[in-house]
Length: 135
Image (cartoon, rainbow, N blue to C red; front, top):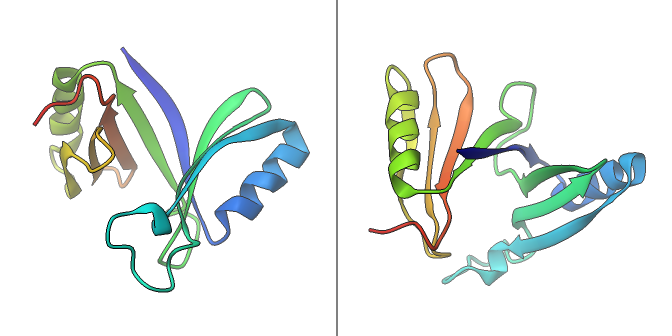
């Protein structure tokens, strides 16, 4: 079983989140900046790598994009699986005929994480919770 969340790439993630909260009601649940990463690059400390929010009762994720945002590249579908096996199976099937942009592997924050574009041009982020992800 998976949990689906829309992931929005933004030129101003925090401002966009606040706009949606004002429009729909809700709250920002957590914010992680690039400044919190190991070996953060100069000038990127305040950029948002991950923002979790609820607007209108619906969960969303946002981050600041490093490339120009336009229709087609501003949203990724994020699927969070309960087990590593489910995540790996879905990742492999979605990658068939598509393009892996970040291999599925354990990340510094502890979760299994990977990104790909499927054969239809849809961007996907696949994760498994930290307590389930293994090397």
